[in-house]
Image 1 (spheres, rainbow, N blue to C red):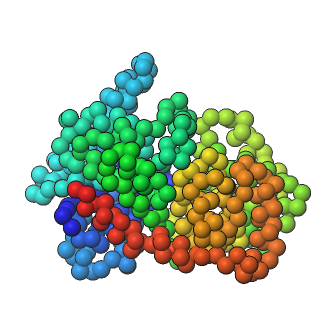
Image 2: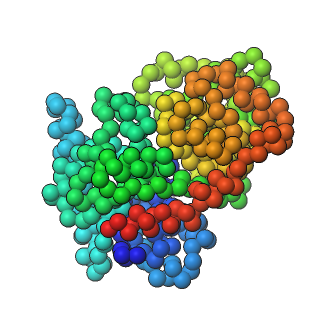
Image 3: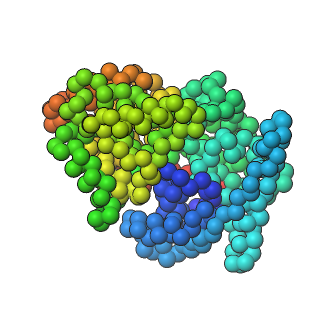
Length: 410
C-alpha cells in the first residue's frame, strides 16, 4: 500500500449510508490503514464497527488507528436566488473547503496526517460543482459514485430535477485520483469518459443474523400476520422508484389473496400526495398486505424480515443501479423478482437468482410470485440459482481487495 492514512467522509445518514460507511471502515482497518472517520453519528458507527469486526485480523486492527469525528455540514444559503446554481456553488465551496479544514484541524490536534479523503457515497447533487472549488483545496480524493445513471440512461434527467448528470465534469479535476462504482458493466466507458481509474466495488451485504428478541420482533409480526401464507416482501426506502404502486396493485388482483404482501421502510414520497393517499387506502383495505412504514431499525432486523419471505420483490422503476437487496437475497438464498432492462436484471439472469419482469407490470409481477410460491423447492431445482457464486463475487474480501486497488491510485 502506498497510502497509510485516509479520512473517510460521509454526511448522509439515512438508509444504506451507515452500512456502506461501516464496510469502508472495516476494509480500511483490514488493510492496516489509519482512518479519520467523519460522519453525522460517530457513536452509532463505532458501535456498528464493534458489532461487525469479527472478520478482521486482530493483528491488522492493532496496527490501525481509528478516530471518530462528527461532521459539520453548512446550511444552504441563497436558495431563492436565480439562477439556482449560485446557491449550489456557494454551498459546494463552503462544504468541501469546510471538510478539508476539519480534516487538517483534527490531524494537527492529533499530531497525525492523512494521505487522501475517501468519500463513502458520492451523488451528483453534492458533487456537481466540486471541480469549481478544487483550486482552493489541497488533499487528493476519491470515492464511491453510487448512482452512475448517465452511462445506463444517457440523456435522462436526475430524479426530481431538470439537470443531466455529468461525471465528466465532477471527476476530471486534478485532485480526483479515481472513482469506485457498483456497476461492473460500465467501468471501461466510465474510465474513458473521466480520464481516471475506475474500479468496480462489490455490493457487500451485512450478513449479521437477528440474534435478539428486539431484532426479531418485526419478523415475528410479519410471520404472525401471514399465518402460513407465502410472503413476498418489498423493503428499504419506499419511494416511487421502488415500484410500490405496482406492488400494491398486484396485491389486490384476483389470485393474490393467498399471498401475503409485506412492505417495510421509510415512505419517501415528495411529489404526488394523491399517490400517497392511494397507498394508505390500499394498506387500510387490503387484508393481505402487512406494512411497517418506518425505518427498519437495523441490518439484522432487515435480515430477519427477508428470512421470513418466500420471495423478494425488487421490481423497481427506471432504476439502473445496484441494490443491496440483491446481495441480501443471495446471502439468504431467496428468489428475487427484478425489472428488466438494467444492471439488476443482468445479474439476475447471469446468476439465475429469480424472475425478470417488465417494469410497472402488476400482472407480470403477480404471475412471477405465483410461479415461485406454487412449489418453491421445484422452482429452485428447475432454475439452479447460483447464489453462492453471487455471494463470492460480492463478498467482503473482494470488496477489500478492490478498495486497495482504488487506494493505490494515489
